[in-house]
Amino acid sequence: MHSIYTFVIKMIMNKLWLKLIDRLHILYSLWGILFYKRRYKNIFIIGVTGTDGKSSTVVLTARLLRKSGIKTAHYSSISINDGEDEVMNVYKMTTPGRAGLHKFLAKSAKNNVTHAVVEITSEGIKQWRHLGIKFNTLVYTNITPEHIERHGSFVNYKQTKLSLLKSLKNTSSDFVVWNGLDKELISEFELFNKYKNYKLQTSANSINSENPFIDINYQLAKLVTDKLGVVVNLTEAEKQLPGRFEYYKGSPSVLIDYAHTPNALSICLQSARKLCSGRLIHVFGAAGGGRDTWKRPLLAKISEQYADVHILTEENSFDEPVIKILNDIKAGFSADAEVYMDLLREEAIKRAFKMAKPKDLIVCTAKGSETVIAGPRRSKRLYNEREFIKLCLNQK
Image 1 (tube, rainbow, N blue to C red):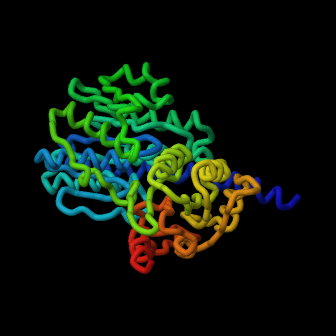
Image 2: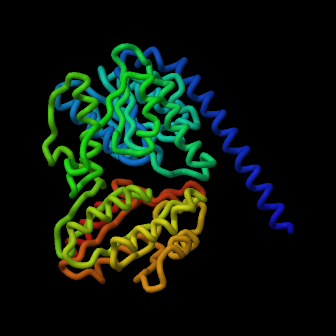
Image 3: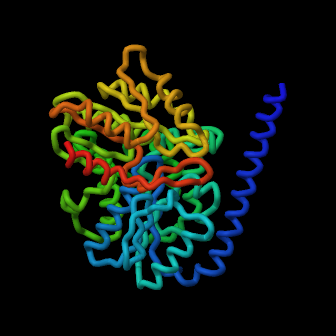
């Protein structure tokens, strides 16, 4: 009985704490408006939101604008560019808090940037990190279930994403771009119709089957720049993004991808299957800290649908024991699935290489270009999957 009371009290305290943090971020943003806004008020700001593909769309849009000669800044979970220098995002935060987005835009303005492309997450919206920033263009990549515990329901999560539309300047030159292939966005057509909007209209047959996500993100980016009167194209090499469907040909070959939602994982593994003439060995985990626990067994079912061998390992466990997360995932496999568990991600990948035959394909998902693994008490362990994979390939 005592444990039940403790659990209830903890849940109440956690919710109160989250509400307090959300309110605190409003104050940070208000300070950001007062201190920074006048410095970036003339920048043309493009906001990108959705469940999957936000970072890719941000970087691809920025690359297109830069290729045309427009000085452009961008902020994404992949990388950050203030108009002068580009660095990998090592902060484990996509839409920065504590007036961080305001500060970034002000610094970009100081560097004579005229355009900025920024990634906006549902958490960022919920905590009002974007408060006071008016967007000239908004891009919606897709909306699928994610962060359900944080938002309370998929409906709430979806409405949080769509609420960003209120931050559109909505002048005669401003517009919304959205993915017309996504059923959830299609269902909101009337809402988009209140604004000048452009729907990505493309057939499934016209999408690059080897790299469908990047292709859709690129088409969204192209639609944005086309509507801005920027007529340029990226080469296939220029479209390649670190840790996004990044393919290393060898014996065995390896594919690294950031896929961590059921939708993204399904598309990634389905595409990976086409590159594989042997077995597909899948190395993956799931986020901890009570985040989206509902999807853990679902990730297992998707993995079992496309992969032959499944190696479960850490992703970002936060304050939740890794073994608990892995057991939650394992519960989704059938009894005859070939499943292994390694708590350390490096050990899981080493196991994959030891098992792999020359024609096999090792697919590592969820980390992508991240450079740390988040653990207990806000700890961050340095880990670069791309560099580790290169090391393993050289040793093979």
